[in-house]
Image (cartoon, rainbow, N blue to C red):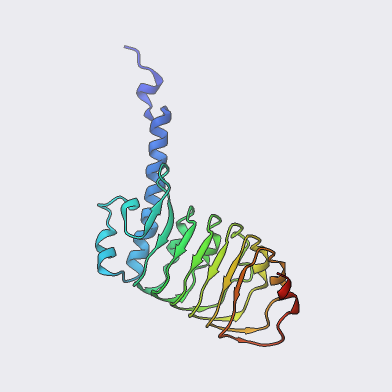
Length: 211
């Protein structure tokens, strides 16, 4: 009796390979979000909905790409606890909006390695620590960074100048010190700059008016 190669090895069938790849990708994103769930306290509605019994793309606050089933946006409120680093495993994420939560600890550096990220909003949390000097090393597509009303300290990184697509930078009401880095003047697309409520010193760059 003769058997064809595709009969013996289903992994050689393109359709099966594609399905296996989608399942793996979905599983990776689901694992990252379940780790996030276990690391913080979510509101009861989201906590019940975020279950392995429900497809990750149907979870509250989660948006996926229609055909590839990868998580591209996370938008939730009313969670609390230390910010889990596993969120950086969402490598297709475009929007991370955790506005008005009670997240504590430092911002996981893994977030700044999500090269697809375009919108980062961590406003009104209790985050501390500093921003990495090379914050934009991987964030080449980032358009908006809003981390207002937290407890971030240290200097505003000059590396922000490498976020060439950035049109909004809002770091108000933290504990940043030092001066406004002149490299910000290289952000030719910048439309909104909010740095009030910090402990900044020095003079305001006159050239800011030319942005």
